[in-house]
Amino acid sequence: MRDISRKVVSFRTALAQAVLKVDPSTIERIRNGEVPKGDPLPVAKVAAIQAAKNTSQIIPYCHQIALEFVGVEFKLEEDQITIETTVKAAEKTGVEMEALTAASVAALTIYDMVKMFDEKCEIGSVVLLKKTGGKSDFKPKLDRVARAAVFVMSDRVSAGKSVDESGKIILQRLKDQGIDVVEFSCVSDDETEIVPSIIRCTDELEVDLVVTTGGTGVGPRDVTPDSINGLFEREMPGVAEAIRSYGQTHNPYAMLSRSSAGVRKKSIIVCLPGSRGGVNDALDVLLPYVLHAIPMMEGKCHDEKKHAASAAGASETSTK
Image 1 (tube, rainbow, N blue to C red):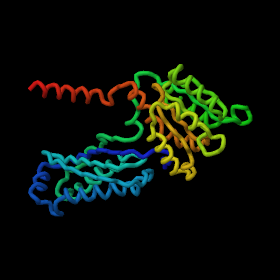
Image 2 (image 1 turned 60 degrees about the vertical axis):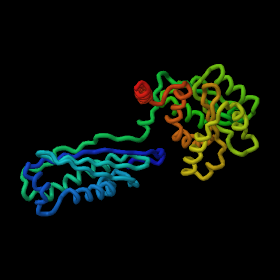
Image 3 (image 1 turned 135 degrees about the vertical axis):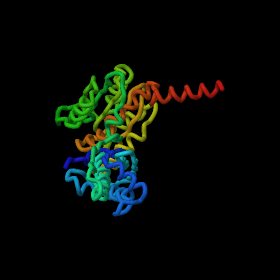
Image 4 (image 1 turned 30 degrees about the horizontal axis):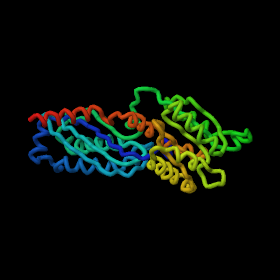
């Protein structure tokens, strides 16, 4: 079974279809209520819903998830029955297997109820028509390579008395996202070093993203947010809230973090905890979603096609 413990919950949907080939006379029997075992459609609908809810008991590697909706629709055609199943859930993993299982069991249920008089009956296909949710749906559409700077805030690391691990984790995970890291430095827990370092990256290098690690606790030398928050032109409280909320599900000490986030010029600045676990948890939340702020800050519409269609409709209405 795949480990999904580090994934972030998102709203998932899936639409599956099964096609049952039948003799034309079978369609007439169903329409006229002449199937000896009773109307197969409501029975198949209940079977599909039950199958979707029990998919993890049928398919070994499927996770147990809490479904929020299962819909089943039937279309009676000349010589086939088309079954479409829709499944929805807010979960860490997709619901396509639940939709496919539901469609398959609905087809099998109808097959079982009509096979006694229809020797031509067969399941033609079971396919996934559509799925939504997960990181693939939230990958930001950038017309260039994003640029980032990474800072390790630590007296001991900057003095060479300790080896950095968290900064290297950030560096690698940003590179995995295709982000160009143009600055990677260690500075001491001192406002006189922190502030000029951040300003140089936002004002001179004009990076898209500044990520710091360390100095977000409540220790006497934890001064990163205190030093950086005053540089924000706009705060991004939702980012810090998401980091702490997700971190709390893995480590109760996450509530002690003073992680913060904001915007200076056209740079996103995010202050992360110093521990490896805290950094990994925060990056699970941030990437790739935080990159969506880059086109937003550049004034680009979230959905240009939709915006254009809406504008065209408004223009047409105004001329009538």
